[in-house]
Image 1 (cartoon, rainbow, N blue to C red):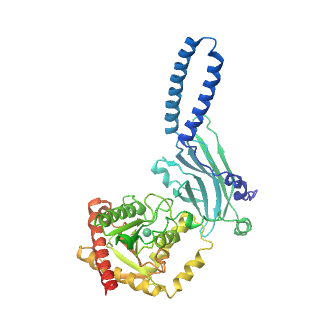
Image 2 (image 1 turned 135 degrees about the vertical axis):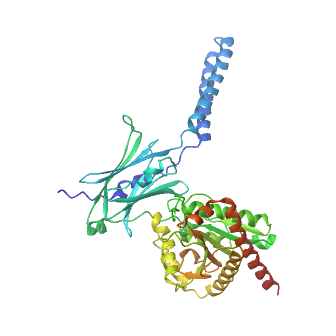
Image 3 (image 1 turned 30 degrees about the vertical axis):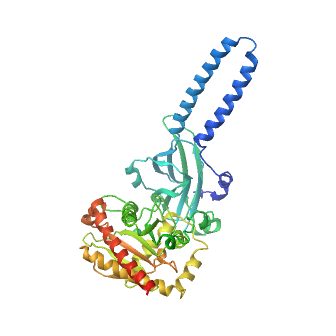
Length: 455
Ligand SMILES: [Zn+2]
């Protein structure tokens, strides 16, 4: 058997990197059209003005009419121009596993492999995902499953989880033919671990955080007396989080809950609220922390909804950061939540050290005390609201809670593996009640803070 050629895919598609792909703006296209039209008209008028002024006027009117028609047509064409993925197929042959993505347009793409765990990452421009949901369960050959979603503004990512070390020995964009649309076709074959390690280059380096985080809201609280609260809807984009019994993703529920909490806090007039994400986009854990720090948040609340093997367990749990987990379950959950970056294929080289340093920083002690205070208030309020709370406050090494200067807690709102609780969390009215308890705890916490600063 011929062993598949090992090709460094990152290099092949490196040239795509060299031209940042951006869809042309509608106004850009229109202004170009107007410049061309005006130029033609001027040339035409100068030539025919002397010959026949009457006919010239008629032609001018006609030209304007045609121009308007073109503008209208162009706008409509642009309105339909957003690229979309419309289908996924996985085929298995003796030599390779083939992954096919149907697309409405030809789009640039980047393909590379990653390890720990092994996966193939496909980065595309931001596009609409119109693939039949049943196709999301496609798998076969070396592909165990695939995930997709907005990775960051401008980048849509598809991640193929593969069962062993692989090489992508062919990645091509095919033009429409017969009944087929544009297609992106990847042929993936298993290779030995040593072959993989020899050719591994990893993902492109991450962008600096500062470029994407909102600017610091310096003195925002002091100026209008408002407390700054950062709310972090867990997961997002290519990282869906847990899946509920009805098929809903954790990322959808955390975003809905975060928006509800923001609404309630802002309605009180006492808080300035920052969401780490306000749409379905992936955000690395360290960036969530960084956003809270940049806006000088006084409290950071990360919202999640867990899923476990048992369908009978339900209730909310409040977590704080600790180097030593309070119990084995908390440790397992933190390990799970910390996988978010790995799941999305984020490149964390250069960040792990920083996080480790932060963890052992003694300056964090006061922050930890405040985190514990809020966690305690929250458990009390959830208890009053009738939530099931079996364990009080638990703790473990959650990466998203590692801001050294922002008191941070993580709330697992409930279990998506429990049919009743999943139904409740999907109900907007129920989320209002749950977030009211969270907001009350925030009120109690800041009342204490204000008393302390006054005395
Ligand atoms: Zn989660």
